[in-house]
Every structure is written in C-alpha cells, then in structure tokens.
Length: 219
Image 1 (cartoon, rainbow, N blue to C red):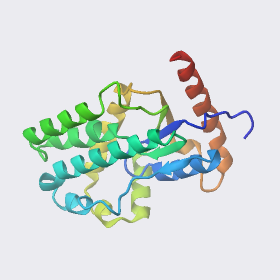
Image 2 (tube, rainbow, N blue to C red; image 1 turned 60 degrees about the horizontal axis):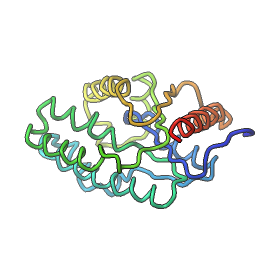
Image 3 (cartoon, rainbow, N blue to C red; image 1 turned 90 degrees about the vertical axis):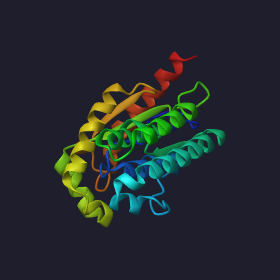
C-alpha cells in the first residue's frame, strides 16, 4: 500500500442503499488506515423493528431518532480530531428515507415539514462539519437483494421487494444531486473485500487523491 497518503484527521463516509456492503467497506478501510469506525447502531434502535411493521405510525419517530443520533456522532467525530470511517451519512435520512415516506403518505405533511426544519437547522449551516469525502457504493439490484437475504434480518427479508426497488431508484437520483462534499462512486462488482483485500488499494488511492485535491482547493 505504497504512496497512499490519506490525512490522519480525515473523515470518510460510506453511503448507499441497504445491503450494498457499507459496514464491510467501513471496517476494511478503517483497518487499512488505522482509523476508527463509526457504525450504524441497528440493534439498539428502539424504533427500527416497529417501523418495519407499521411505516405510517413510526416513520417520523425513526427519522428523528436517526437525525439526533447521527448529529451527535458527527459532532463527536470532529471534536475528537477525525481519523474516522463512517457507516452511512446523515444526508441519506432526509434525502432518501424521510422524503420517500412523505411522498408515499406514510409520513404526514406536518411531520415531514417538522423533520426537514430540524435537519436544516442542525445540518445545513456553515458550522456543521462535512466529511472529507463520501464513498457511494452501488451495484445491481438483484445482487443487493441477495445480500439482504444472506444477512437474514427478519424485518428486512419480510419487506416487499417494491420497497427496495423504490429505495434503489431514489438513491440513484439522490447521489446525482448531492454536492455537500466530494463524492467517489464505486461499483460493488469492482472489488472483493472478503477474498481479495488488495482490491481495496485502487479505492484508497482514489480517496487520497480526492481528499488532497479538495483540501488544496479550500486553502
């Protein structure tokens, strides 16, 4: 892994739809760089399981919970001096999940307006620290659905395919509009972290190049 110079205070965020492999990528990059990880806390979320049973009742509760937890985590990461790889971004909650439920009617108009007002007040300010780079993972939908089946979380495997199809489409549209930090798009077919960790090296080189270029431009 020669000539890969990623600043020790960098913050790298991994984004992408459910089942695309964000956690694996997060842990592998962090291990290679000696960075800490910030992983999505699924098991401790009191709203996640009820949400999958009743979207309309729990969507607002879930999104506010995620917003609060991600905001606190983002603040902690930057106050500690960086050196983190983060599993999922705070931007996906408003850009994908909350908007999808508002559009489908499983979040009321009033709840959505309240949620977006909170998001804008907390995140869309010059004081909120954005990552150095956002790694967007994408791939074939059937491949991603197979990963979800293999993971075996009941609340996910019992969810209708149409839900995952819509989320997939919304992610594709969302990333084309995202401009709050530099983005690197990576197809999950282009690497195999489980059997060939050397396939990560081109990704690390690209991360280093993007961060160095962006930091030079902002000086």
